[in-house]
Image (tube, rainbow, N blue to C red):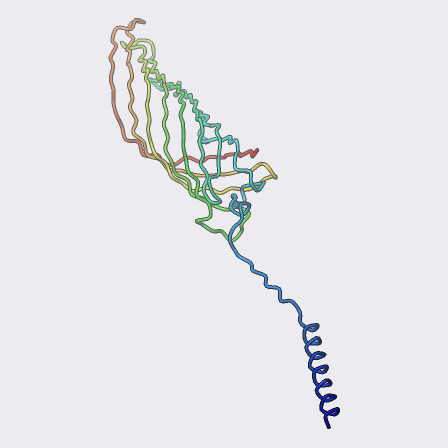
Length: 243
């Protein structure tokens, strides 16, 4: 009986050892993959459709304003994206105008003017949505500052006591503006924008009026005035070239 007991014990140990090895061989490693939705540095770059190249935050801007007869308004400046939805824009602006009165009237007025200014604006993209994403709208608002000069004259027919009145002056403006625009990507580095803004400003005007009698300036008067000007709106086309 003793040899049989030892044989059964040895067989049991061998069987249990074989089962343990088979279990270890059938084990497979478990791989755990963890993903997060945290934005990378690339995702934090501007994502507006206006941007032709991801990561290109700077652009030169060229604008044409006004579209008024007898007047040319424009500007040149730059744009910089501070986030995926906010861009800062600054520009130097100019306006040149000239007009003539009706030669058939008893009094003929003519006016010429020139103005230079600075505009600082903020663009907010992504606040409004259109059915198509190809022309995304944006909101714009900011401040303007400008200085200028003008010359206006009135001429009278011969035989009048007063032959001519000249009015020369200077202007100083400080104002705010706000409006709505849309942008469209033309190519990889060029975007076209159109916007319409409304503005309000405080204007200080100083001018000198000279009255000519018998061909001689015999009456000169100076005056200063301050006005609150509420603009009816300005339309603007702008081209942005990214670099």
